[in-house]
Length: 79
Length: 220
Image (cartoon, chains in turn blue, purple):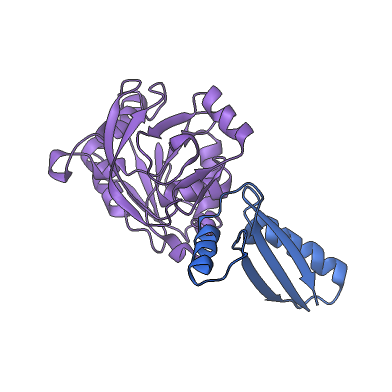
């Protein structure tokens, strides 16, 4: 089973890299980008076949390592 | 005073820290490798600066989960004085020993220069030899030193006198100019600037020396 994890900065946390991306897009002539936020995408190949067990396990991985919940949110998709 | 310097792959201020500790305390510190599960009983633990594990995932994230850190966390929670400089500060926040997080500098650039700090609280284990409000000049060298915590945490840090050092200039966008904080118990200090690089005039100044002498005077 594959787990796809998105880690994003929480609302209210300043994202200087996102700001730089937003400016660069503007400089390239792309109008209409109000804001850009940068995050991370992590893909895991899991041996587990039971979805609930897999989800619980990935959720724990996110809390213990993959995301820093002081500043980041995460979302998990299982395939 | 017996001390230990924890060495991670990618630490690069471990030897500066060891030299500073040996010069000031007169005792050569034990260097402890990140894979070790245990190390000698010491009076003081230092987590040095650097780019441990290449800053993979987040600065300090990998180191915070290394073998040796389980023991460091245990001892720090038991009250052993623990100092994290730069990457060491990032490791301390990643373990949860200190609140908040260190994010990419607001200006996006790596900042490498001497900066002015004020000693905000001279009544800590790490700052007792300084005067309250004393201005000191200490170098910074980091890309991710932008201190972030939610407003409640920041208020708590301020109210409890746990902001040990504050920048007197805009360095990296840190909330409320925070350069260094202590834990509630007062035995753990994390700071981005490098006092170990300012311990004698040959290094450009000796304003960092009192940090180490404060600890030594307290611990004997």
